Length: 160
Picture 1: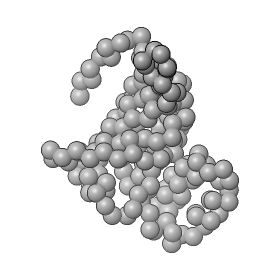
Picture 2: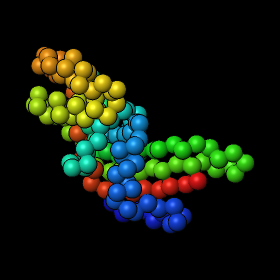
Picture 3: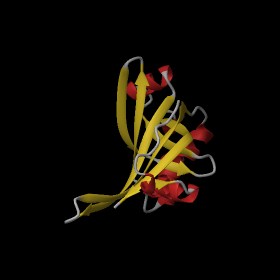
C-alpha cells in the first residue's frame, strides 16, 4: 500500500530510537481492525518488546476483536505521548507513531506468559508480586487471549 507523504515534513520523526521511545513511553495503543466493509477501533494498554518489534495485548477468549482478527489479521494502530495543550498558542505538544502490522493469537502457555509478563513489567508497581499471583496458575492462562502485533511499518510525528 502506498503511504501518503507527511504534509509538514519538519514534524516527522524518522529516528528509530525516537520512534521506539514513543512505543516504550505510551500508555495506550489504539488499534484499527477491518473485515469486509466494517471497521472496528479499540484502545488497549500494551507491552512492547523492542527485540521482536511487537506489541502485546490481552483480551477475552471470545469477542468482536477476535472475530475481526480471524477474518483479517492486518491492523493499523497509534500510540500518542500527550505532552499537553500549549496555552495561548492554540496548539498541542505530543509525539505519536502510526504503525501497520499483523496481529496473531498466541497459542502456548509460554508465549502467553511472556506477552503478559511484558505488560505486567511495564504497568505494575510491583511486577514480581503480580507475576506470581497471575502467571503461576496455568489454568488462568487458558481463560485469557494474548495477542502479538508485529510491526511491519511505522511513522512518527511530533508537534508543539
